[in-house]
Image 1 (spheres, rainbow, N blue to C red):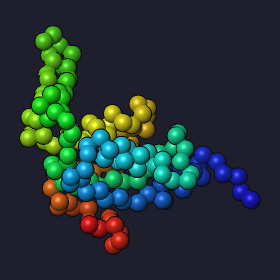
Image 2 (cartoon, rainbow, N blue to C red):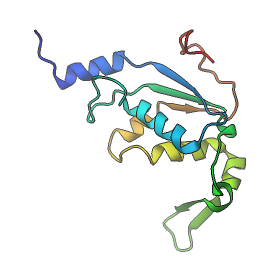
Image 3 (cartoon, one colour):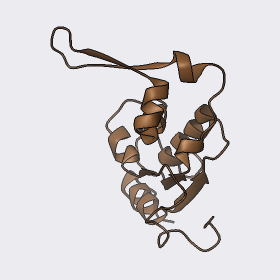
Image 4 (cartoon, rainbow, N blue to C red):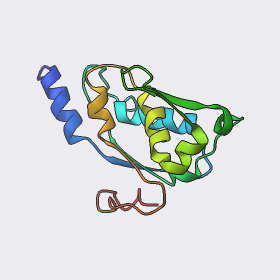
Length: 146
């Protein structure tokens, strides 16, 4: 019986990647983001290891139609700072959803992933689209297509 090493788990994880399609229409932003984060990490797989990037590709469509509960649309803000004096920028969620709704979903997923060296690799496998059309239909298997 061969000994399973970290290298064999990495190879197994890279071969076992699949594309998961999620339709965001009418779903809650937080629950959807946590499901996407778990799929990106690979926590649903039996050979999950925190130190190995074994997650799947996640394709999210209709991000513009995601449901926001409470008064988040009016009260929540996104803060960033350039590092210079008076370089703070505060953008309300309503304005950010009008400009680019995929940024809202991206930040929600990013902040649910652990801060380590694997996070950027996992986020590269997250594909988001505001509408229902996307260029990744060839990657989806026939039973997964919407």
